[in-house]
Length: 236
Image 1 (tube, rainbow, N blue to C red):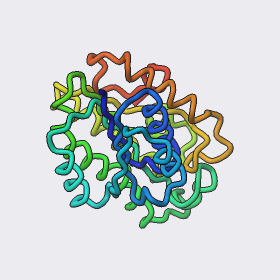
Image 2: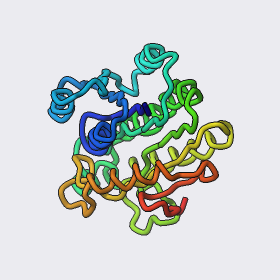
Image 3: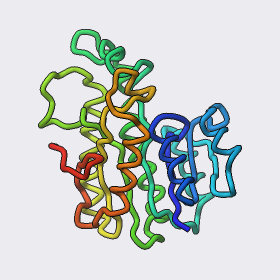
């Protein structure tokens, strides 16, 4: 039975990944800061057939990440979805003001880096042994088109952009050092989630469907790439 660990699974893309993997018969370990407070996870748990495990884990709490990794010691993970992320308290356009040149909120910037970058690094390092125990392991660092330097044509969103661009750098480095694990940075598209906001053009259900289909056919030769849900390369 294939197994996946998903961080930030309480809502948005993380929750949808959990939902679709469960529907495929995968064993899903869904983590979130407060999984008991998520209506979406509660719904999945109510219909669970023994495939879902909910664990509290804040990726900025490194001791807790280590504890969860220890709790799963000896288990293999086919996929680790490093999905937990933050854009701050508001979505997309509404959140531009607190990460602009004119009105940067430095505390929020630090928080984003802790979650989107350092937390993702900690998760990757702690769950590397679980990935190594699988046959064709995949580590997905959930990035964003906003993390592309080459495609940045409007500026803005400095906190979020910088955190995702740095995550892309981690992805490349890990792919060089971890030859036995396929490591990618994923640009899922601008999705209608709490983070993306209601104006976003991409249906998160469809984005996740395409992502998972891509994961299943992805070749290890693509390790270290920044790619979108279509499987196309995204500019660094």
